[in-house]
Amino acid sequence: MSKKKKTRYQDYVIKDGRLVGRFEEMYRDHTDPWHQSSREIFSSEKAVGINLIQRLQRNMYIQKAVELGCGFGEYTARIARTGLQTHGLDISETAIAKARERHAGMLSTGRLNFSVARFDDFDFLASYKPDIIVMPEITWYVLDDLAGFIQFLKEKLPDTFLLHMLMTYELGVQAYGKNYFTNLEEILLFFNMKYLESGKVNLITGGSRTWFLGTNNEQYYQKWLKEAEQ
Ligand SMILES: C[S@@+](CC[C@H](N)C(=O)[O-])C[C@H]1O[C@@H](n2cnc3c(N)ncnc32)[C@H](O)[C@@H]1O
View (cartoon, rainbow, N blue to C red):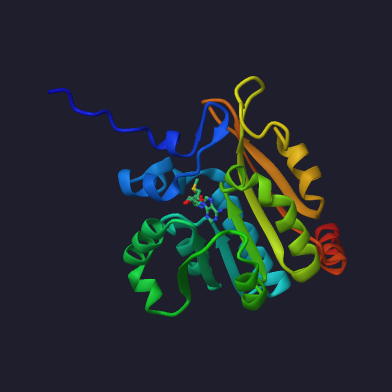
């Protein structure tokens, strides 16, 4: 009898240039999608992100962070270890249950929390008032809701920094989301913030891991600029 072939984790997410978005099913069927626990934790832009968070702690006195699309919470826990009060959100119940299990020790300190929620849970975000929102590798899955999220940040959380990270693909490889952006420069144009830093890491397998740290607060921008010029 032939055994049914397991669907690749990628096919639950985006297939044939279209968003599938079956994240909960994917987490039930696969133990480490995106190699979150084995490879992703070593991605270079994530280390840059921690460095930027620590700089913001020292220079801008940030205290509270939210990670959107936190998956198993590996990065959320790293952010919490910098000393920030940190809350991870993910749409998948299974991912959040595993995040709670894996980081039970830190949860008990009260410095780290996880919730099942959409990235654009504006009620939660407005009441939690994070000093920084961290958005690693979720943007391709929320493209149609991105403009509303950017508007919400400008209007309701103008003092909140945004640390954004996203894989981009070489020309001719990307099939989905090309009408939004295809590289770092286009991502920066789309988010239309004041940028304190941005950059990318080019991968041996092709494509780049991009990041930016943005603000909508002119005073924060000027303060960062002044310190950088000293
Ligand atoms: C590529 S994983 C990134 C995990 C983690 N941030 C990291 O960088 O290792 C993308 C995550 O986004 C979550 N996600 C997708 N759409 C979402 C939405 N609309 N709201 C909240 N989470 C979402 C998925 O469940 C998945 O855990």
